[in-house]
Length: 274
Ligand SMILES: Cc1cc2nc3c(=O)[nH]c(=O)nc-3n(C[C@H](O)[C@H](O)[C@H](O)COP(=O)(O)O)c2cc1C
Image (cartoon, rainbow, N blue to C red; front, side, top):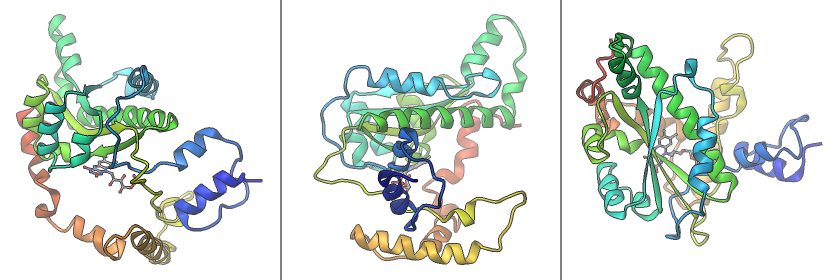
C-alpha cells in the first residue's frame, strides 16, 4: 500500500494516482517528491551546521574515478550576492536568500597536484575531463539540495551563473581550469509566498524499457501540456503550451541568455576542450 503522503506528492508531480507498488513510509522518496524551487526567502540565516551537513552529503555522492573534480564557493556577503545576482540576469532571490552556493567544475586542484609533482596533466585539456567535472558537480549539488530540503530549507538552482562566466570567475577569484557551472540559493522559504510542486512529464515519455521508444511520446506530451497548463493557471501564470514554450527556449542562440558564447568563455577560463 502506498502511504497517503507519498500518494499525494505523486499526484501533485504527475497529476495521476501512483501505480501499485510505490513504496510507503520512505522518507527519502517523500523528501525528493516534495521538491519545488523556492524563489522567495526569509532573511534569517541558516541553522548552524546546515552548510557543513549539506557539503558532507555532497561529498558522499559518487564521483568519477574518485577524482572529486568539483568545489563549491559559499557566498553570504550581501554585497557579493548582489553583484552575482546582477551577473545572473538580475535574479532577486540571489539577493534575498542568505546563502548562495557557486558549484564549480574544478580541474585546478588536479592541475596543481600535477605541477607539484612535475607530472603531465594533459588529460585535463579534454572535453571528457570537463564533462567529468560537470557531472561530479551536479551529483554533489543535488545531494546538497536534498539535504537542505530535508531540513525544511528551500533551494533554487541558478543556471544564470553561466551568463557571464569570466566575470563570475573574477568575482569569486577562481583559479584557471575552474568554472562556476551553476549556482544555488539556499534559505528559509517565505511561507507567505509558498512554492508549489511542478508537474513533470509522464513516465511513459522518459522511462524507456530495454530500448528507446517513441510510441507513447506524442500522447504523453499532449497530456503533459494539459497538466502544465493547469499548473500555470493555478499559479496565476500566463497560459502556454509547455511543448511550444520549450521549443522557443531552444530556438536559437538568442534564446540562450548570452550562453551561446560558452565555448569561448571556457577557453578563456583554461578549458581547451580538445
Ligand atoms: C541547472 C539548473 C539551472 C537553473 N537555473 C535557474 C535560474 O537561473 N533561475 C531560476 O529561477 N530557476 C532556475 N532553475 C530552476 C528550474 O527552472 C526548475 O527546477 C524547473 O522549472 C522545475 O521546477 P521545480 O524545480 O520547482 O520543480 C534551474 C534548474 C537547474 C537544474
